[in-house]
Each structure stands twice: as structure tokens, then as C-alpha cells.
Image (cartoon, rainbow, N blue to C red; front, side, top):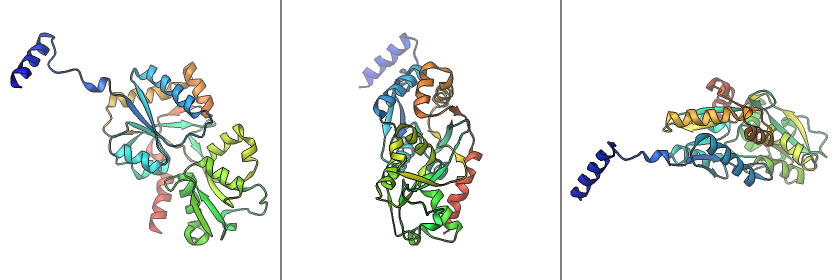
Length: 283
């Protein structure tokens, strides 16, 4: 065995190499996603992968999971390099990830949480009118689909577990809308961006719901990178995202997502989410 190692070392030396070529140059970039609301999500993800591969000059693999917790578990264990997550899990896991880029929606890097009820419900005016009702949350790690409505109840000295008659998680914002539209839930909290996009793509679905309340603005769900990801890869990925508005293929992808582009962003943008998280934790 030692003889073979000496031969290999001599071979590398003859080639002018002090060590083997780094494996990371051919290792795929791994990006985590939760459910995509687009009807043609398979073709969209394929097109996005092609776009990123052409800009990064690396193979790209999208890894989809059912919820934010699964994605963050993969990030924390180093099995993902980047991920598109919600602001709530980002704030909760800042020791494991770095902010990479923030999407821009309708000219701003922000979005809102919508409180929705069936369109037949014309009485409900606020979350305070929903005592003993069946309520649909999207994900326990969602800002708009969980943290915001729970925080609003705390603001009126109420606890979600005792206030609502029944609650359940749908594990996607679209399914919150579907549950409320079908009457399976009497109300729900949903990402306003997703509801807006569904209103464009499936107006027949959102027409069966009514937006009772729009929350304050929060920083849009961010792209994050793992702490151990090489800085060169971080810079390349950030550049690929931020140059999308200036690229023909990038423009098409952004149009399908209903986004204007991406900005670098900063932690201060997510301070309001952090404050709500601390309030909830104290209750």
C-alpha cells in the first residue's frame, strides 16, 4: 500500500500537482425548498436548475421537503448548501445559517400575513371574532401561517390552544386556502404573497375565501446559506440570484414567481419576527 502511495505522489509531482484536484469543484450545489405553489412546479424547478447551472458552472440539485423543519434539519447537518425558507425558521436558526438574499415583491422585500375566512362569512372582522372556530395554520415554523396569528391572539390576551375550537396544520399555504374555501376550516392564516399569486392563477379558488385582515409588513422569506459553505460559492449564488432581472431566462423565471428580483438584505429586516418569537416563547 505504501509503495502505491509513493507512486501516486511521484505521479502528481510529475504533473506539477501537490495534491489531487479538489472534489468540491464537481460536487453539486444542493438547494432546499418546501412545497412550491406553482401548478407546473416540476418544469419550473427544471428551468431554474438550468439557469443556475449556467451561471454557477456547477451541477445544481433541488431537494424538496414537506415542511420548514425538515429543510432546516438538512441545513444544520450540512446536507444542504442553500435553502429558501421562511423568516421564522431563519431567525430561530441563525447560528446555523447566514442570510444570502431576500426576494423583492411588488417593489419591496416584504409581504404580509392574510387572515382569511369563507366568502360566505361576512360577519368576521378580526381574529377576535373566531372564538371556538376551526382554524387552519400552514406550518408551525411559518411566520405568516402560524407566528403572526398566534402573536395577534397574545395581543388580546388570548391563547390559540384555548381560544379556537380546533386547529390543524395543512403544511402548505395553498392548502390553507383550499381548506377554508371548502369549509373544512372556518378561518386560516396564509402567506399573502401566495394568496395573491393564487388569485391570479386560480381566481375560482380564492373567490371562495375572503381576506378579513392583512398584517403589518414583514421581511420576505429569505434565501439562506450554510455556515460551512465556501465563500466563493456563496458569492456566486448571490450573484446568480441578484442578476436574474438582467437576464432573459431569469426574467421569465421571476415572472412565473411574481417577483421583481432579489436584494442582499440584512438581519435588521427580520427584527420584528424575532420580537414576536420572543413574545410567544414567554407565554
